[in-house]
Length: 328
Picture 1 (cartoon, rainbow, N blue to C red):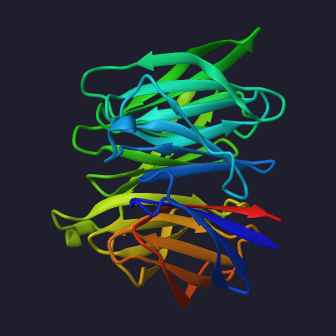
Picture 2: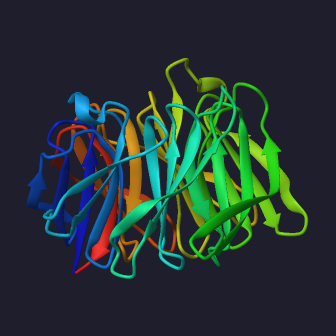
């Protein structure tokens, strides 16, 4: 059995939905916090970020915490502005927050019960930076950071001792101007990056000793790209064989096989407008797509052997921004 957490760009806030046999049904909702653009879940705790608030108290964004029943809700101010992504480090009991608004990184510490203790780290970048996405290496000892504004991705060694955090820069890769690296997908030592403005898929390998090694990049849309087409979400299957990309404007999902090299094997409508997030269910039998501007989540059957998708059904929800599956 599994549920889905849904964060929304609306005053309706956060939803918990039951996901069973390819269908969603409403369990609970909370409108305490609006514009929750990303969420994380662990051991009956929900963590998230308010990207911005139309209520004055959290105008520049905030970190939020609650139980899985959407009770015991708390909000914490952060140093950065316009947070857009949150990453849970369950080894060190830390929360990493990417701030798009002012291009900074914040980190909070948790106690052994998962309660937020305090802010312990704030990292500014440049005046042009827009920190957008965070991801771990598979052993969770390296943090990868995408800077959409400065067209860079970074790799940091995580050093944490006595509640003191150091992020030691190991490597960075500078993309061409106008690409805008948005989200990363990681499988073993392979890193895939979707760019927002140029709608390209980049492939790197990475090692701690030598850093990023560029393998190649491909244009997802080729000559068919229009001005309002922007790259958005990326997911990699657990076996590393298939990559799924969402493109806003085209409002489609693009499926790539990774072996022996990147190859586009399917283009399918997202059955909505503005596919902001795509997400597997826990068993990867389905792929879900959160269509922000049409207010629906499209559900696709996924063939694990071929990687191909088939549209199943749709569930209405206002301005969905992110989806997080969790077992119950």
